[in-house]
Amino acid sequence: MRFLLLLAVLGVCWAQYDPHTQPGRTSIVHLFEWRWDDIAQECERYLGPNGFGGVQISPPNENVVIHDPSRPWWERYQPISYKLCTRSGNEDEFRDMVKRCNNVGVHIYVDAVVNHMCGNGVNAGTSSTCGSYFNPGSRDFPSVPYSAWDFNDGKCRTNSGDVENYNDVYQVRDCRLVGLLDLALEKDYVRSKIAEYMNHLIDIGVAGFRIDASKHMWPGDMKAFLDKLKNLNTSWFPEGARPFIYQEVIDLGGEPIKSSDYFGNGRVTEFKYGAKLGTVLRKWNGEKMAYLKSWGEGWAFMPSDRALVFVDNHDNQRGHGAGGASILTFWDARLYKMGVGFMLAHPYGFTRVMSSFRWPRYFVNGKDINDWVGPPNENGRIKPVTINPDTTCGNDWVCEHRWHQIRNMVIFRNVVDGQPFTNWWDNGNNQVAFGRGNRGFIIFNNDDWELSSTLQTGLPAGTYCDVISGDKIDNQCTGIKIYVSGDGLAHFKISNTAEDPFIAIHVDAKLHTKLNDSNFQKQ
Ligand code: QV4
Ligand code: CA
View 1 (cartoon, protein in one colour):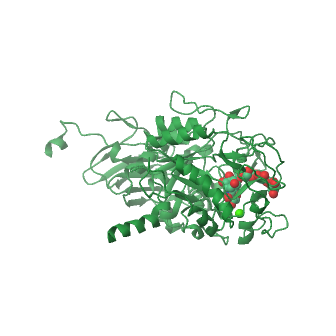
View 2 (cartoon, helix red, strand yellow):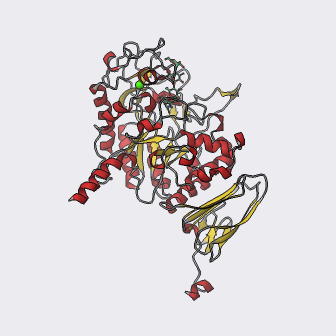
């Protein structure tokens, strides 16, 4: 009885930090702006079979339709109601996606935009994805319903009514983020409406939430609506499972609002991670990969069990949000693959892979004037994700998660799950390697000269397929082979001009010993 009580207490304490991915699945992928029908198919044909744990989806609730500029991606961050009705699909399509993904072991994480409704300056009318009427001027959103009482106009103390100074925690929380009408989250009515929306999604079977603009909400107000959430749907989750919560707080240091203010509610996005990793791989500010030996808390990041990590996100890949020019994206494919490879091999944090659409990036005076461009579309309708014969995506969907190097590193992370960080090696510069116990080993060459070293891998003897240059197929390697001897040592050679200057091996990519093998006979 006592033991059960202890378990229950631990369960309650830890639950919202637990992504509830299926055993052996350790990462999620953000399928930015995908249609629900495409996500359902992707779960069945690709994510389930390749060990992905879940999908972060774009906001599923009704949003404003912006015509000038034409249907920017960011219109989805301007809610009009909590009806499940967007360019990605309607409620039936949403339910079908959640069911089909859950049934193949891939969970859905919803981007919840609950700090605000649409922009203050948007015209009244029915220009919304489900045709709901709204009037920003009079603060009227009858489809929720919200009215003037439910917004923070009376509370905000800035002249513009917008957040003007991030050093003033009151205005960051009580004023409008870039003009977005700020909800009065201290009101129980508003908290209840938000919880009702989220509980609707939980009933359908989602596993958790990214909470947009968390920095702009008081942690206590968030706790109040989070406490109203139900346990996850027992058709797919264990009895008593709490929704996974990860809060979007951009804390690069230097502001009074800290990530740690939000730890009580759930995990928090660690924005230092991508900003620093990009700086290191680009060798800016005298950084080098050798310094990554203490990566994680040693770099003043938040505790690993509170962190949601990523190399880039939908904002900072196009200059929105934070992180700056160091952020690596698919536009810098070679370095990007190394960055994502490093992230997925390293034990720190819960990992999210980005999956983007291509847009006509065009810099004027260092700023991308097309940073607003929405997903691939035909007359405003989002184009389906087509799959090419070589398994890449068509219609301008980048599908980084299908790049074989990234897909194989998602599998690597699953294979080494729970193993310690071991056998670090570096050359004092940009050649580094590390293992994950006796399950996996990875080595990078980001120097301008060849790497050639014999290193301790910690792995059992055998022949391993490098999962970066190829795959193990029918017990053969399609790429580089690495021979680990009985003492765990292996020789590695990586040209600085290699297409991908890194090698990763793990026990599931080890060739089986043949029956007539001398090693086998000795046993
Ligand atoms: C314009 C003016 C404002 C004016 C307002 C008046 O610029 O000065 O007050 O009109 O109505 C868009 C436009 C922005 C426009 C605003 C309101 O870019 O120019 O204001 O709409 O109409 C995304 C985009 C934003 C976009 C927003 C809503 O990035 O550009 O704003 O969607 O459509 C901070 C936050 C962090 C945030 C990050 C971007 O701390 O929380 O900025 N990140 C999240 C999301 C992000 C999203 C939002 C928050 C808002 O990841 O994608 O913003 O939901 O760091
Ligand atoms: Ca707010």
